[in-house]
Image (cartoon, rainbow, N blue to C red; front, side):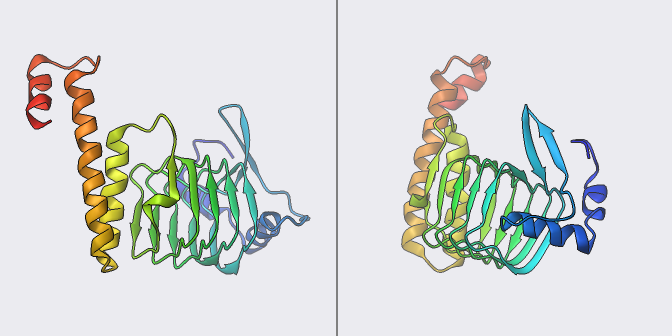
Length: 211
């Protein structure tokens, strides 16, 4: 399938047989059914866009160069799994277990994680912009951002993790994250006020005032 297929088309192609074959592939086993691939920016990705995975265990799975964009994943165990170079953008994860999992160089933009456990998990050089964590066990110090991550992105991540911590009743963590959020917001304002961007004089003065 192409990179321009509709979400409905992507989800509608997943028959029970094709889904079962994809799960076998994720577990490192051979399958009689060929799993589609996707060419994107010179890379060949395993095309799992729109797949629905429920109530199964993928503990220790090695997911490399796979696209799960627009997937729905519910009640799935990823304990000790490694997700490397994967696209998890706009994916919905609910009641999942990512204990000691590794996310490395993944695009996780506008994804949603609900009631999921990230104890001991690590995010290494991933894009997390606009992703939401709700009622999740996750620590900010488990995330190592890409070197080119702009401060406004870091502020948004801190803001979401702060709200998550508040929903879990962890107010000390929420306070620490609120401080980090303000710090990154100030860095973003500093860049707007004194950076080389093409801002109008009024916008630049406004950024200076807020900074």
